[in-house]
Image 1 (cartoon, rainbow, N blue to C red):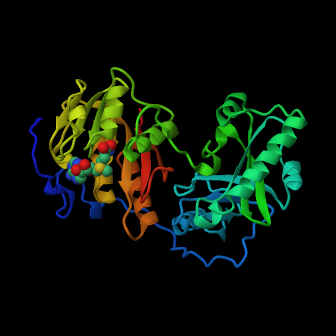
Image 2 (cartoon, rainbow, N blue to C red):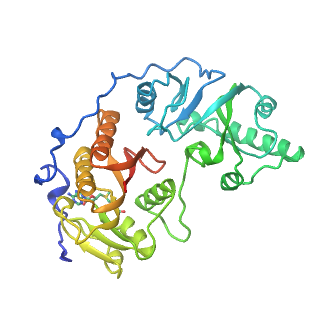
Image 3 (spheres, rainbow, N blue to C red):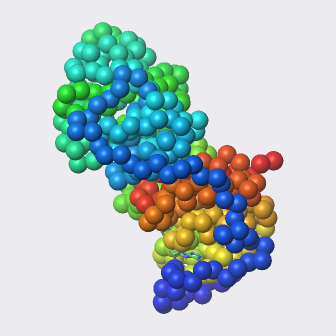
Length: 373
Ligand SMILES: C[S@@+](CC[C@H](N)C(=O)[O-])C[C@H]1O[C@@H](n2cnc3c(N)ncnc32)[C@H](O)[C@@H]1O
């Protein structure tokens, strides 16, 4: 491991694939899951229409095709409502990668009174939200009006509502969901807060870090760890692949973990100076840890199937117990590539492989997995 510093950005970022490690099967030899037939995105209806039953899902703007296809592949019978809003006749067996949040629909309401009647009378933290699109955000003022009215009404009825979604989790209470889909009305439903796909209203899980100007990379890691529900602590060991300029490495070291920070590019000087950080200025494909570590993090700007193969090698060699990785999505075939990456990790022995496009993920998804006992 070296601390050499180069003044040039490495050439490894683009172009040539990594040299083949004989212990790593090539991506073409990787187990390929049998993919269902492609399900193209239908046109939007002229007016947004929500059925009175089923599920309503929302995604990042521009990822309707992926969410629709994922629900179709899960045989959940999706339909489009509006941009970034898709319903399904039933819930898929696993939460969709491309859904920011979703809820079972109890009914459709044209007025605040009608919406109120569809919610649990007490023990419910209500969230009123819109799709995160230009058209959705134009309904933001209306959603705020509904929110204010509902809050006033429930307070006047002395409803014993949790004040925050986290309180709702602690109390085993409900998260009331109202998605304003048009000026004419909203879809209404509820989920147990502890079962919710996201505790953030509309799945807009903005991570704020007090006292600093956070980088997007730092917020991505915060959100991923929040989703995972555990994080590295003092005394634990981490490897961070594709770590420069060092946002993730800094955070991991600040949590008290020791970090091997692997990237041919330079780390920010303040990160390089941290006593718990060791910069390994190599391609991740050429790095092997001196001994197995607790955590493997990976945010490499590299082709997702090759990254999945690299993570799989770590799994087969039992070099890390828990993986948190950010996979950059290709231009085309995003969902098939996510499915293939998952199957590469599962074939390597990883358990609880989960993929989600989190709020801070752009054209990328976060994957978490653990090695079984
Ligand atoms: C999105 S940036 C990582 C940001 C980082 N997580 C942070 O918090 O600052 C992607 C990084 O992947 C690195 N990368 C690309 N190919 C790599 C390879 N083969 N091995 C290691 N790092 C690589 C790039 O040098 C770049 O620094």
